[in-house]
Image (cartoon, rainbow, N blue to C red; front, top):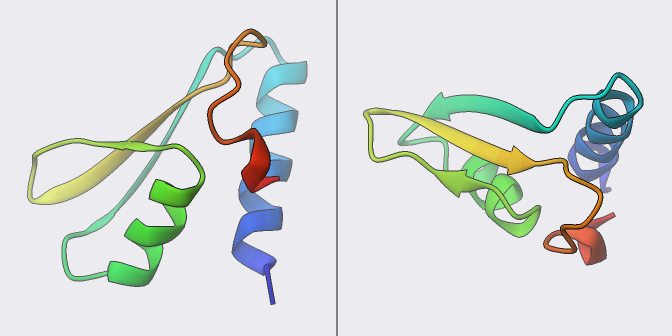
Length: 68
């Protein structure tokens, strides 16, 4: 249905309007659907037990734009 993708896109856009350059989301290793969503959006996972994905919100970055 694309709800998760739309929520992430809205969060990123709002962050950009506030001047944010990065965003983070966290989930657990066993939450594969969330991890896949973050990966498709261009997130970079941390190696920790709690998986943290970081997103670069800088305007010059094009990674993940096709996700929106």
